[in-house]
Amino acid sequence: MERAGPNRSGPDVPQSGVKKRLMVSVGAVLVSIVGHIGAVKPPATPPKPVGMAERVKAEILHSWRGYERYAWGHDELRPVTKTAHDWHGEPLLMMPVDALDTLLLAGLKDDAEKAQALIVERLSFDKDVSVKNFEITIRILGGLLSGYQMTGDNRLLRLAEDLGERLLPVFDSPTGMPYMYINLKTGKTNGAVSERSPA
Image 1 (spheres, rainbow, N blue to C red):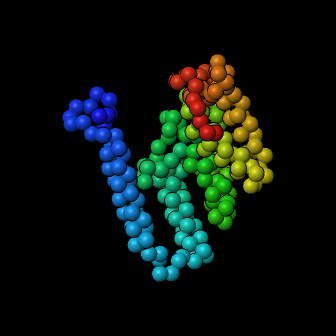
Image 2: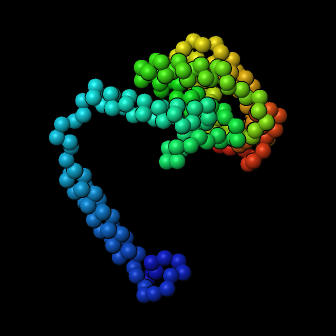
Image 3: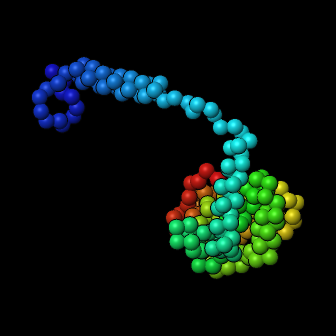
């Protein structure tokens, strides 16, 4: 008689019996899931696209006002403590750069212009800080490029070019995969040998 699995103790159980019990268990779970899905009722009236868009815009504005009030000029707002936080000890303006395209898409032109002014006046990458390549690429480099694309402001493009040049040494690895961390001022890479990322 075959045992249920290698090195198992206990009574001998034929493989066909184990398979049968497993199939019955899986079937019961599927019936339970399908029954639950069927029991879920759609909302009586689905949200109207215009109403939903206004709600989303209101939430974006609420978040942005909190940032303006408690963390202006810093990387992010810690909403529970209502305090500012800078990821690297000094600001890289992650929130304004990351939010610029969102503010523009939401039609919050005055807020977008204020964020854009802060970015072009105060953002500098000439800082002796080690940053995570992936995070900086998706949030800051991506934010600057999308901001440039949406506004045509060449100052945003120049900032993106400066940052891109500073990030290039992350690809000087034995595999060509980017290193995880890089110092923005010195170009020195550190941390894990390389990072596999979807970016």
